[in-house]
Length: 355
Ligand code: F6P
Image (cartoon, helix red, strand yellow):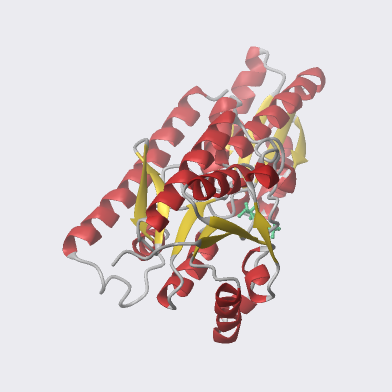
């Protein structure tokens, strides 16, 4: 028999991302519209453990959609990884009669959601990370805004580089994923992009810079993904100056890229995901993450999503694939190939047209 939901919880966990508020708003309004109360859990899983909650009305969320960050606050919570922490979280759910949870965040958030689902609290994950590093979904909430922020910063750096005939090496966040660096590199006309997913040819970069300088070009932008490491980015800046004679500056915008007004794309995607999350939760699904696949918003099994992520990152452990059918494994392999092909194609374009 289908479970009757009376009250659900919503939380944001891990690094915040612009657009999280739009998910919260959408979840709250959709659930209330469907006759279900909403409890906001403050500070991610740690709020669930320590019973920090507030009831949400439409009015509470009416004015949050244009704000970055998360009105529910966020946390990276090690205590939740322990059985004791988990049991405290379940006790909070029982105390407040929370029948299910929508958890917004990245892969760590989804691991927590699956742990809760196994223990009888139905959970639905919604992506919220600027890194776009969840293999199961084509895009994540926050990614578009982060890229647009890098774009504005990069354009400003172009102006001053042009005045001073300089190169700016910009290191952008993304943890171990090069998506932000790749896309913004193309959009900023970077002469070079360095990211973990692809080999990087320093000598080719130096040669291209010298050629462009000899043609009269004054300003240069190089984008480096955080995953390459801070030492790499800073020493690359010095090496560029030494090899080309072009004065160079290193810029790390860091967390600036995680804040700011969410873009239209992020707000709309977030709103659709929030709505879908409520729909599938109330329809009786659990342990799924809401993904975008080829422009469709679809629920994907969280365990499948976590394992395809490991497969893509070459981090599969013995037995990881045991629970999946040959068809599911083939699907995982095809998705990993799709992601790798994206980087290969983009890298070729960036290296061909960036100057
Ligand atoms: O996952 C989002 C992210 O901003 C990464 O890009 C970055 O590596 C990390 O979080 C920074 O984490 P913290 O906010 O804990 O410094």
